[in-house]
Image 1 (tube, rainbow, N blue to C red):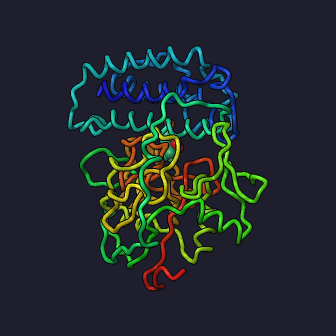
Image 2: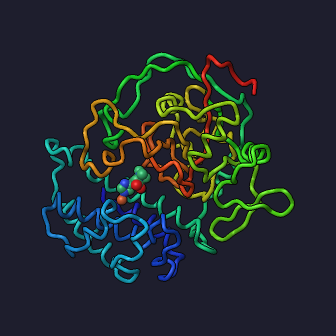
Length: 397
Ligand code: AVJ
Ligand code: FE
């Protein structure tokens, strides 16, 4: 466990290594925290759950808990809070980690304590740091001339496959959600049965080529980071670098409203999250473009050897996929270990995203993993995969 905590931290620090103190402290966008807030929050979350709750110790600085409470402090004011600045945050991260390791050294994983059974609280800690890496990457897209320390070009050279536009998922009972074994968040449980009508789902994520055709015909707004190149084409800017939009890649940085409008234009619809999970059955996170290393998606149709049981590819990795579902509780849901992780977000305000993106750490993702965000959000690494009722016939679009 100490090794995995260490790996997560190395990854976090590697992301911010190229940045100046000014860049760490800067507010780039009112809907995104300054990077420095994420760093302090990662360490404070660790202090709260490990050092205080499990270790029974006092916090290093009692006032930090409130400043790093994500619910108390909305993103747009995080830049104005008296949070730890770049020179203070690293020592705080180190001191908390030192105490975490002391607590870890003296702990019995008591199966009677639900926080400790199967190392739950440690898995939660890792997943938390991993998820904040992705939030940080959303902001890094806006940092002029950001140069990643290391980039793995592997995913870019994965060959794209040919195949049908849509694949069929059988109707009938499907089991949805995480089983009782292994780490999962409260919102993925309990596992339960849903009845689905048979439906078609796109074999691959929607491509930039598809999306450009849609923009042409429907005159819609382009995805975030796109601009006209002056000759009728499109360029996109990420991390200060302008590149021609690659038609083979999945479209990314679209809002739920845009995804929904695209699907309707294509004569299709977004899948429900239950349909998405049924279609993802059998997908393998080990053969997927995850883990932040490639700094972009692979071509649509890549990883065809790791298709899900229904024949869909890239269900995991590359781009998050918007679903038509609101983020709500599964029947029999119980908040654990705190209602602020999931429960306070349930309702009709947030839409569910599934599958993870190139910017998601591999260990975060499972076919049952549920992400959620506001339907207007575009800075998340989200794309589109469409569905259609089987009763409406297939593929004649
Ligand atoms: C699951 C990505 C919506 O960032 O708000 C991080 C993850 N929860 N810290 C978020 C999370 C607490 C969460 N999302
Ligand atoms: Fe958090």
